[in-house]
Length: 141
Image (tube, rainbow, N blue to C red; front, side):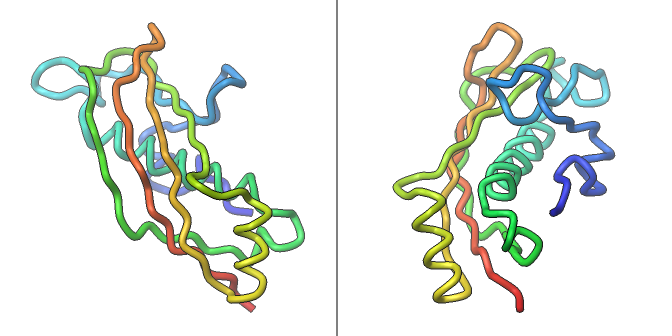
């Protein structure tokens, strides 16, 4: 299985599994992530969110197929809610489906489209970012 934290760009940014089990991933507070306003740069937030959607998918599929699942980002709707500061953490879910239904479709058709809503929160648990990531997922072999 792909380790999202080891994807070269995610590794470069230092994206890690969240310390708090309520969340998926986190981006630590670092000056390198800030913009001209001193808040977390939009690109850093987007990268954390994209990785979070992928992390949800990869940890959700059954072990017997996960090594043959290839998610590719197709489309994104993003809303930056508030300026983000400090450590940023993420949550993600599946929209309008379950992993069982997705897996069934993937096994029968070898491809599926999935939407993962992702939210990012700062240290005060304020929602700073929301997005819907649409994934095209194929089953190789």
